[in-house]
Length: 255
Image 1: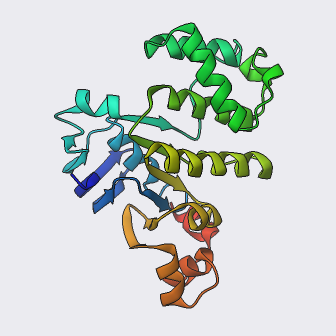
Image 2: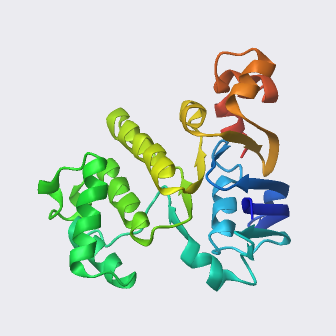
């Protein structure tokens, strides 16, 4: 099987004060060992798509498959193959980073020794100061908390890693360390990665292909280099402005 992910005519809406369409007839495939970027403003449907792929949401129409398994009918086969890092990772904030990871290790069936070894290896690559492992998570910066979330995600050796805005709000150094780790992990572990972001520079530097999503629809899906060549623009943010004719803040306001 060549495809890691296949989505066909995915649609999802939510009923609030009025009907909100989060995904509108989205179809695409992702190859094995590809870093697939989904770029768009807040409210464009990025996180909804990630939650469907991670079996946390059921689409209204269409289907999604992960390594040939339907995410709704075969969710129990999909879950061991994936892991997810979200923009707001869930933790027990009152206990230390190490206690959070040790608890996660138990859930994943790892011994304390295996958990410690994985923790030291991954967080070492992410530039995390070992002296701070034992501090309450609520005392750590957002960048440090995201590094803990990434370490936890790699406890299971996932085949598909879903990164939902993992660097949003991080300082430049933390963002660079996370980006470098993601690229190394994909190259060395044969991972397939889906990365959602509204950072065009991040998408351009990391992703093999990029989809721009606006109001639940993919308005473009292409390699970054091809987009730049076709548009004759110097970066992806200029491509976005040309495609939409709007600034990011205008799209944010409308969503």
